[in-house]
Image (cartoon, rainbow, N blue to C red):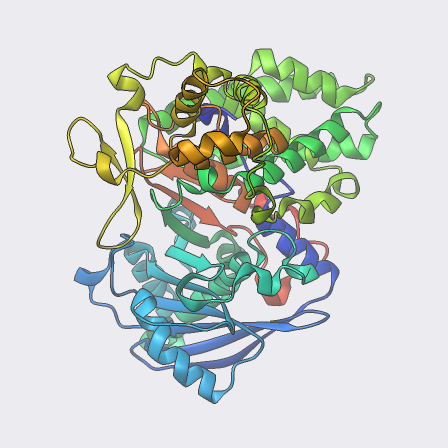
Length: 544
């Protein structure tokens, strides 16, 4: 749970995108475009409906004519090329009219419990223009340019779980198809990708008329949905300890199951080697200019060369996966080690896929403070779960150089420099290590048999920290074992950890505070989805 380790995680077969596509293929979901009312200037709306065994969900998309000077990836933008909501069911005429007044203005509007998500996206102008022009002229776009950019549109936010009036998580948590985390948001993005392909082909027809051609299916599948994610997502890992614990615990449980296997069947070894080779070749399409990620990619390329040689000779012995993981701990970088963890899970769907719904959590289960606990017991928990925090010199300026706060304008998390900005009075409780050390020091002046309730009556300022310590005892993977206030802390590590569980690829940090990724690149489009292509699409470039 160190940030440098979490910042090296990769997607795996338990990632939320792949859980979604596997389930939809297994259950034979049906997909239809139920409306596409977009004019020649690219303005209008469309509806895409996904129907499973028990119910339907519909993406309602609004296309806009956005002037170039208004296009921005910033969360504070007020206009976008397209806006979306995922509707619970199939919308009627009155629903479309209501949504047309609210969805295009995003935060300035209001959606209802009939909607499960709210999102928006902007074009990658250079690639969008290129693809439209080529298709309008009866030609296919340049494959190299598609590989370089990777998406025609990128989302700047996909909101769910009650935000802006959308349905709370509890409304859908009991549905089998929504049991795993973020399935509504992933479905929204998956259907958005279908809309984007239809839109670029529509604009090409409007420009080229009879000469225009459709995007070749192989090229279309290489295109994902881009995403720009900033500091707004970073505190998630701190604020949802029960949920994060379950994500990591399930992944570690899956890995433990695979490591315990006494033998690997020939077909399992063959699949692992195939996906390893495809991963190595796909690495050539991973673009970044950030120095931290460039160094990690250089190490990963060397790791994969080493791993390819090792995997060709050493998988026929007993407990091959345990041997390989143990070897990697001393031979590969963290980036290479974590990719290997993802790859060894791949041949074992029947062994690990059933764990997916266990990644959800009822956060309220950890909220009640056990006031009967003695202070001696609480101090022992801090010593067990926060040893790194107790050995940190919190008086050193570098240890608390940063402070998290919420911006007044957009109510979004921000990170400031404590010594340079007057932000300390507005600081959010996002430094659990420092707070645990403060609590431990405060307990020293009290008798060990004093109850926690008595202590908190005198010191209510420690309530949130006492709660976190008790949660850490029940959910040991729920707490970052690192200093989130340190001068050298990289928020992009927190962003990547969460995005890897979504199933994102092509991590491209643009600074230490925001990152671009690609979602569903290589996936079949909804009308093409079947059991043969529902899973390993995440390795697309190597098969092109």
